Length: 238
View (cartoon, rainbow, N blue to C red):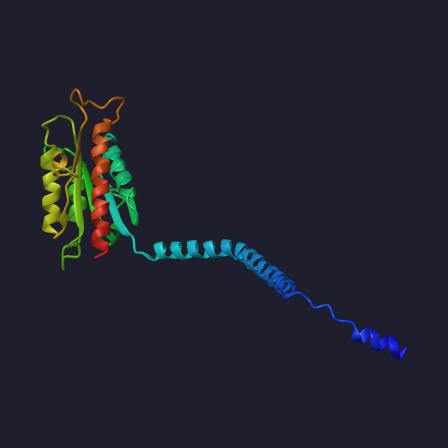
């Protein structure tokens, strides 16, 4: 028995290949690394939707936190045509981001509406080459003491039966009144509507078809509303 043990002890030991040891170690380390990466990727896939939702909520809160400019569109309409123009003006103003638009008749609009507005756009039909009595009464109710309307933006629009029936006179009368209150008046986007928007409703070839204002004039109304709203936002951000 002693001789057997001595014989076994005397046999040369088989050495392990360093290459095999390193390979075995690398395979273990690589498997561990892949496992960690897969685990991390799985966690990221789980957390990513929550992260995106967080960013969306943060963005929406930032937008909500931004104070909106207020645009008041006020009008008086006898046959509905000035109302159509007013709706077009309001539609154009709503195209601008960060704007709150209120559309009201002169009888519906309150003093509080006027004071809270950053921009006031007033519309009237031509009435003996002037604004209607209802529109003038509305302007006469504006507060004057201590100039609370100073630096608000003002603009005008009108409808008239003929091409030279007093549309520009009405626009200028409205703008002149706004200037008395210290407002900053704005016209349309180019020289063709320098004093605001207007529509011809009873003279060919612009006669209102089916009682509706021609699209070319409604387009001017939208452009005026958009320009005024854009100016109001810029003033608000100063």
